Length: 382
Ligand code: CMP
Image (tube, rainbow, N blue to C red; front, side, top):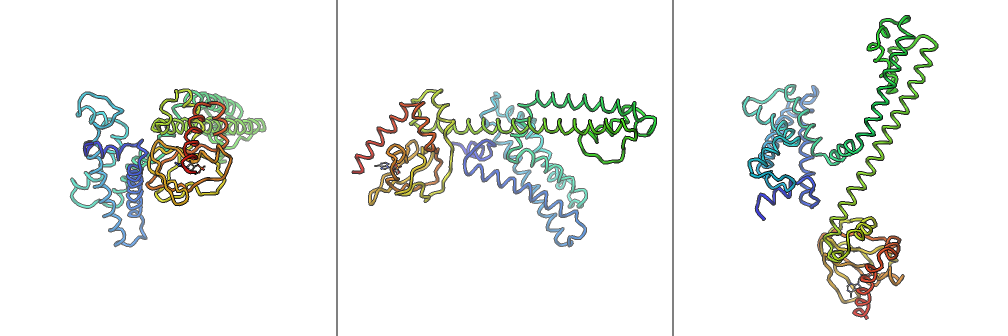
């Protein structure tokens, strides 16, 4: 693998590797340090020496973002999700993508400071906060998820927005009819009444504009109730959208992990879909005792990456990616027969006992294969 491909692996926003996650965390930390140091520079009571340190930190962060931009530009052709013909084109596509534009904006402070020569004043530097907050928006985990949820739920959200507009304009028009005589300055026209309608419908209620007539107040009450209903509707749409998207992403992630376990290689797509719904992934550092002899068995494990050691009294057995363990206690309904300890950092797929028996009904061939291996192990341990 070339150096460029390796660096792309570290910067790939969807990579689940430990190193890639660490790079993402570091980048997030850098953005937060940058925002914090620029913000600190605008506080009057901070001592001049501390402000000078904050300005230097902001400068360092700006330079690091500049370097990062150049690195991202260099590795852009490694992105497998874009298929342009030449390297220059894939770089250009990254430059004009939302992420590329935002990263370019984040570089402005470094370029401005370099071309201006002198150090920036705290107030003019405060604009960096806005640029770096934008960068935070693209690199913070979960922002992509929010964007996706809004995209998935766009038709339901549009319907709720339409309902909002209907109530808003109806309320503003009725308030204009009822109140224009009493308060022409606030309700003299429909656009003027809209301010009251928005404040009331969003249940903000500044209280700066209040209907005077009895009927106007009744309408005000109704608008508030409508506002609560519309907001509840929006909250419901977004909450369901989030739950569905998180479930979908988890399903795809587990599916990718299952695909890496050779034991599932011969199982058809429909059966895999069955299995994926029952599995959870867990990461363990090296040296963790995953199973202890004599414990009650409540789950079995498939190794996606890493190595474990099975300790049966003085004897040991090594298991690696593609193998499984913890099945005997579930099949025999007996306590655990051995200790199982991770030798390297491991990613495991966990199948709990209830799901194991449910799967036994749905996928008897799969459980029979596990049973055959358990029989072989039992014979070996005797
Ligand atoms: P269980 O008894 O639930 O917990 C300990 C696990 O160690 C056991 O299931 C098996 O999965 C595993 N194990 C026991 N003996 C062997 C063996 N000889 N080879 C590989 N794995 C084993």
